Image (cartoon, rainbow, N blue to C red; front, side, top):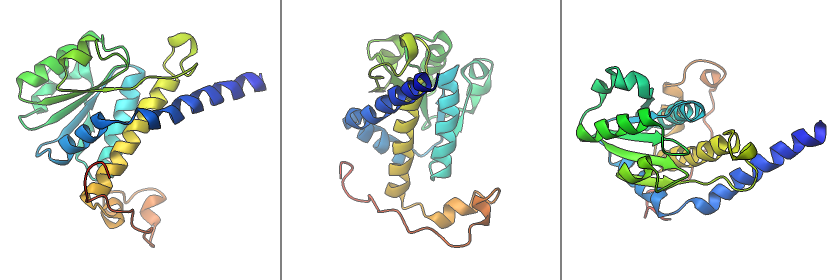
Length: 206
C-alpha cells in the first residue's frame, strides 16, 4: 500500500513538473489580457475543475488581480448578470465538452466578455469557441485510467499559480497590499514584510 501511494505521488509530481514545458505564448497572451482588463475576472468550472477554478480565482485576488469564482449553473440561472463588457471569463474544462460551461461561455461572449479556455483539447467545443485557448495536457499516469481528474487538477492549479505570481510582479503588487486584504489567520499576524518579489515590469517574455 505504501509503494502504491508513493507511486501516485510520483506520477502526479511528474505531471506537475511537465507543466513548465507547456507554458508558452498563450500564457503571455493571458497575462496581457488580464493585466489590461478594466473590469473583473471571473473563473468558472464544474466538478474537480470547479474546485480548481475557485482556488485560481482566490489566488488571483490575493495577488492583486480582482477575481471571483462563478458557478456555471448559477450563472445560467441568472448570476451571469454580474458580467459586464470589459470583463474576462476563464473557463476550465479538461475535456471541453461540459454543456453548462460552454453555454455560459457563449452567452458571456454575447455580453462582450472575453473568454479564456483552459482545456486539454483545443479542438473541443470550448477550445474552439474561446477567444483565447490554453492547452494543458497531463503526462504519464497523472490521471488514473485517464478518467479520474487527479493530476490534471494539479496541472491546471500550478499553471494558475504561475499566472497569479507573474501578474502580481507585473503589477508591482506589494506585500503590504497583500496583508491589507488578508487580516485574518496567521498571515494577518505577520508584522515583518517578506522581501519584495522581483519585478517583471519589462517585456512580457522576460
